[in-house]
Image (cartoon, rainbow, N blue to C red):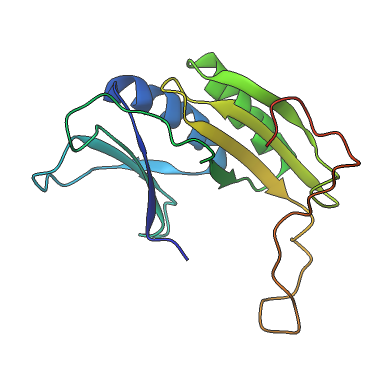
Length: 160
């Protein structure tokens, strides 16, 4: 669905350290970025795919990176252990907690996730979607929906 997702950073070296640690347990690898006249950037991909890509960029306009209110990047994990490892690596390299690893049954059976902010303040979610692993491929009488919003179930502090 996506070609790429990018977040802004004011310190590319710090972002490379943070995202390298965070994305390693998820199986993503940093790849070289071919200079194209744009701002400095770092990129991560699945080793067996060219797309989608995740980038951390210095802002094009040369100003300090700022946050998108309400925006969040969610990375898929193959299992709950990978969620916990990625979260721990992110915290260890300058991330801040927004919701520790754990089940979020209000989002679906088997939904295991963690929330944190990168050193620039971008909100990151790492999630294992056990609720979707057994689902049939789209187009086979499935309906597409977002995780249900259930105000009767208290989310972890920091969840949005």
